[in-house]
Length: 373
Image (cartoon, rainbow, N blue to C red; front, side, top):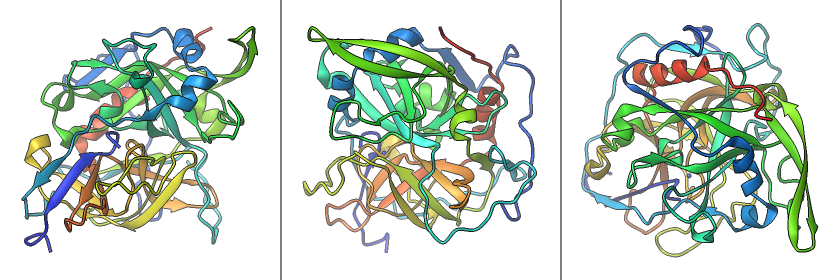
């Protein structure tokens, strides 16, 4: 198939446990130094300022993060990546010692939502700089961890992290401003954690990030004399409110997974099947994807899915159980592919989660945050 196909790929944010060896989050306290491969940096925007920035009007006008990046790859060889160490896993929150019931329906996970941010070194008042991606809450020692794509936290063209970064789990877009969009609160970034090979080398084999967020707040917006005013209350830790997905690494490249996200962008042919207003999902079996040299991409796994811009950062969940709405994070939506040259995205892919991924996760999973106000 690949020998005859034209491969077009685009970063999705430009668009995007039976048999498990259960383990706990290892490592020391947040004050411990992270491995040299891990880039950890506190958000430049004060948390209260970031939350207050995203008024109902701005949330409504934010667009899927699309810098017009795409490529044609003539790579025909799959990445047959093999684990670089023993497989490991951390269980989802609430399932450390329990077994979930079965469900015949696909229930959408409360952990998944949208992240909003503004482009750095640019005028934050300009709507063209208001962007969003997808993300998910994941297990961590302090229940404050969000997993997403690295290109949903870091601007490789300006070599810095994004501003005004917040996460809204279970986001949905109401017909009226701020109508039910944040049922579990809003969580502002405190610390971004990514791999050095993405930050320095722009290597999409490391296109994943873990963000420590402050405890959430619920906001009641009211317009007074043409200006938005807010009242807020603290709602506690992210994981206590929505739970957190498990995490697993060094698994087979061929797994049955669900992917969740908020696609909204166009296909290359101009068709726009999604609105980004509500969460969507795909299901399929992963396989190694071809090389895409423009993004140093050699070790991605992917499966058939027509997600477009906006879905980037959403989770690949292995062994997902609809009854508990939990599974194991084994990837994040990173790149959309047109593998047959018909100008329609037909695959999504994620970096292969290996020991390097675990190092970034482990450093992030042991960082404390707390309230920001």
